[in-house]
Image 1 (tube, rainbow, N blue to C red):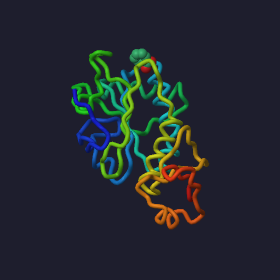
Image 2 (cartoon, rainbow, N blue to C red):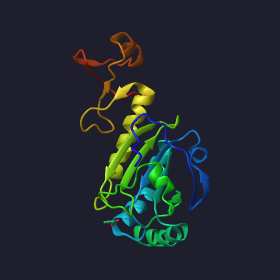
Image 3 (cartoon, helix red, strand yellow):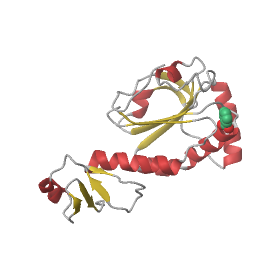
Amino acid sequence: MNAIKLGDKAPNFNAKTTVGEINFYEWLGDSWGMLVSHPADFTPVCTTELGAMANYREEFQKRNVKVAAISVDDLESHVRWIKDIEETQNAKVDFPLIADDDRSVSELYGMIHPNADSTMTVRSVFMISPEKEVKLTLTYPASTGRNFEELLRVIDSLQLTAYRKLATPVNWKKGDRAVIVPSVSDKQASELFPNGFETVKPYLRLTEVPV
Ligand code: BEZ
């Protein structure tokens, strides 16, 4: 099994999806990406998750994140299941649902954890930067649905680090002060954060997030 680690290049692949055949890199373009695996079509937790993922469309778009989901089911099954998701979750599923009945992508990304279940993917999350670098990996068991508010919070944190040289402290949420990353000197910090910052300790400096 491949174990993808933070900082790795996200593996590229071609796949059949519910929005047509895609090359993952071409489909991502210059956007951020979130690739999630779900254990199986026509299962209850997955149905709620993918409905929610569709309904967070605007939040992902605001953050320039393209989202896709994958399981080891085939395309025909995905297409039939989407009808149920849309009917029961009041959602329009317009992101790609990747068909992986030959398991090639699931194995490439290490989404099958044989000691948990050798026949299905676990609930993996991969966040990918525009440079195609893996920035976050998460693994949930089949029985635990993910929290999409938390996934959006993580994207906000990743983007604050990428674009603002800020990290996010414990339980951070939008509107809270963030932490200046240690590689930024006090002199640089004064330039980057003209509204100032609080030095609690030389290594713990808090500032308002610039808008
Ligand atoms: C579900 O999506 O509901 C599910 C799938 C596999 C095992 C347990 C729950």
